[in-house]
Amino acid sequence: QVQLVESGGGLVQAGGSLRLSCAASGRTFSNYAMGWFRQAPGKEREFVSASSGVTFYADSVRGRFTISSDSAKNTVYLQMNSLKPEDTAVYYCAAGRTVAPRSALGYEFWGQGTQVTVSS
Image (cartoon, rainbow, N blue to C red; front, side, top):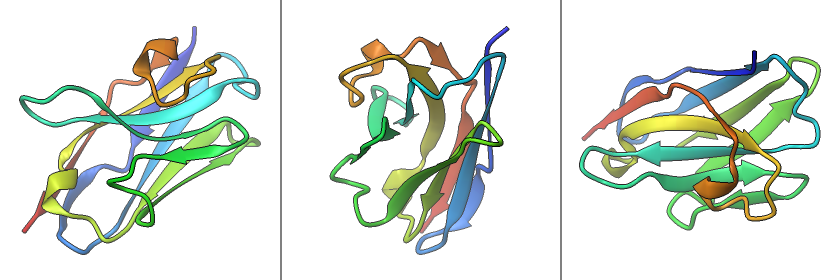
């Protein structure tokens, strides 16, 4: 059974940092794009970052967030620095064999999400 489990969310003050982790199990995602998306209350899910050999970032997080991975641990990370209140959302990890990593439509597997709350 394929599982993606996110962790690392929490409450942080503006300007602070968090590192999200996404642990994958059930299969190897070496040929998959790994993405991070987020959804704030009342808003649609939006792209944050992805890695498929090349890294992609939303304009709103470029320069503040960094995606990385540890293949030995089958884990993807999202380092989030200089957090802002507008970064508050549930963050989701996803995996998929997609040629359009910025689109949620191409991802086959999703985690349950982890809450990130940034206070002002």
